[in-house]
Image (cartoon, rainbow over all chains, first blue to last red; front, side, top):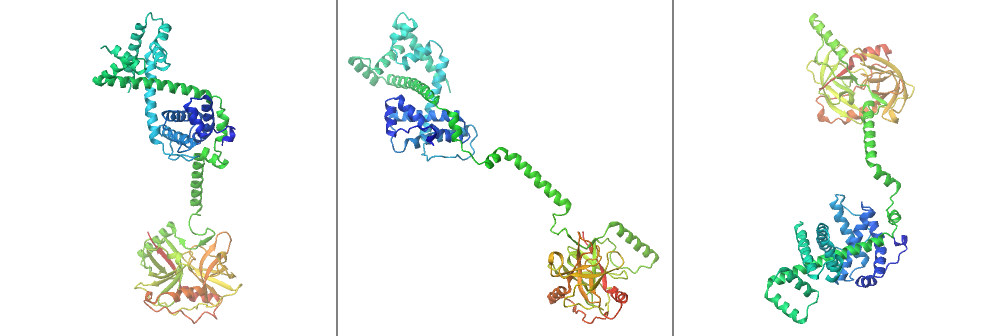
Length: 189
Length: 367
């Protein structure tokens, strides 16, 4: 199958190490190695290329988080793990779209990963809520939150960027912004 | 302590910006005040979520950048399972194909129904039982009524209209009659009518579906003995080219049908039948087939529809076998076949005169 792309399949241990080191090269290798497998799964089961992309990227993120948390054990092949996650994600999506015909055409062996996918999707829901809250927050609060909490910029940098005359003003502003963000976040159901 | 100050302390604590003394002080505060502890946890989770949101966003950007380098469309084309052309055609057009097939089947059934091919009967052979048409029967009824008024009628039997009719002939003097099974099949009641117009009620006492033969017995109190049957039954085979004739009731008067034996095998090579060239019509079914000497050699059972003058008659050997096979307890009177043929020396004309009283119209009544 992978002959189509002429891609090399990286060794599983190399991928794990690469993820831990946040290596771009390894991420690319990983991505190219298994995408055809997932594309095949999705397009032969009532999906299109964009569906395959969504499902595959979600699975890569699941794998990343798992490895970073340190609880990925190489008990199965990476390929099998990715296939299982994608299969589960795609089944769920088919059901949501009422396109699920009762059986899925399989191309690989797979593991039971229901719990893991469930956990991931719960967290994903939280992150989506956070995205919504940030969108509603508006400027300059959004940028302050991003700079301070996401990009780890210092209060000094933030002062300069927004032209606050002293750090205390900036701190007060940041505090207000955080309170509003929390409110927006918890308001969503 | 104000909330914003507490938050700042929490942030500094979490980021490890506190001095050792401050840290110890804050740890003490955490232990003492549960509210501080809760706030710390909450803040940790919330900012953690913000970080994860950022991580996911960054990751998506990285993945999208990689994804853009793949020629997904070509790849998808290669990976698509390509089923055979038949399967693809079926998937794309199965609804249309189903509808077309239903219409075709329906049209075929309708055609078969209207051409009469849907019945089990072979269309090329026609059984000669006659469906009596309404007009004729009404006419007969009128005649009968007229006869009743003038007091001349000797006819007996029911006045309702017979649905089917055929011909039958006597097996013995005590009222056993032979006819075709298809004449009397499904009948509610069966009457026989002699040449003088007298009707007698009969009962079907034996049938043989494989040779299309039925034996009737007259059980009407008005029936008197027929007198000795003048003809015999031929046990052996008759030869091709022999002169044969039949006497039957395709109309209300007896009809003589002369002809010749044309084949030893009947419809579709059936060796239980003769093929004869004798003019017959509906109503002739069940009539006797005689040879020149006046022996019964068969019973008229059908004709071919596509060819003129081809008639089929069951061979007498099979009739005899059927009669032998009748269980003894179905017979209330002895069924003894005549073995002495008294017609042999007579001319055709005289033979028929004598025969006439032993050939009957079989009338079938049902709902």
